[in-house]
Length: 169
Length: 211
Image 1: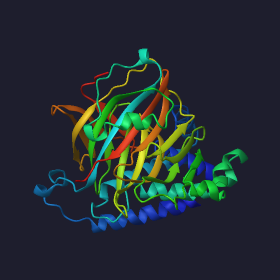
Image 2: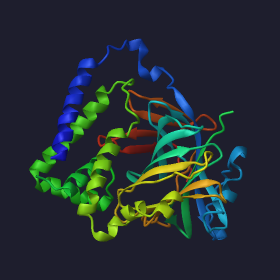
Image 3: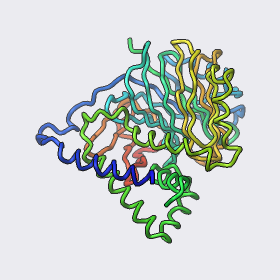
């Protein structure tokens, strides 16, 4: 019953949108326009472990603004080593989805829901592992207050995803 | 009439939220049930049609709005369909001391987090949706780390011999018509492209894996 109602609504929406579809000039294609953005985020996938010999050998280093992230991770997760495997600096598009992809294996989809009261951004986040979404969350991300996601275990440790709102100044 | 749990399976399949085992099982059901197969095909066509014709200026609150609303409705039915143990996350809403601490647990379902006492400068998690019933998500704010923490327990471990394909992405370009995002590294080289398949699931094509 519920699904039938949803289908009816979707059918009506498709018909309406087709009727309302504007004529777009070929020279004004959307892809030629740089999308508006709401801010910028830095994301990283971190391998947390106590096994020094098991480190991957990654040479990735956090940008100076986020150099204290490994120390802060140590306040939450019971590991001694925090190795950045990959990192990604990404504009958050206002009307389109954004992807934060520090690795091919674990990555984040980010949808902006606009500025938050008192600063920061309202975001809808999806944490993906290959073709499987692990968690969806609505969050407010503030400058100086990162989001740490404790993900799957790997080898002798755990994979952590870090998302930080870049300072707007 | 289908039960809510069958609707849930269908939506999880369309949203790419099933594990490989669940997906194979659901596809086997589709093969054996022509009505289910037709329904899935129709939903996929309509979803693709909507994406094709949705104008950029459409005031949708955010890209996953429709899915989220459907999931909220499904979550409202969860206590009736899930085993008793899974209703624990509803109990958290009824414990004021834990709710005001902005700590929350979701076990294979949807959870709204109360955040009344959070300082203005803290990041906040408003809601959590975990599609896999075997995964437990919990969120809390760490004052010591000055960070919001979302922990996923019960996620299948990555194989130890799996080599992470890592990137250092400095710039991206999006093509709304093709629904693709091209990822560039610090030297300006294309290292990967994110696209979507017919079920709106991401497909990540890497050009220069670094291992």
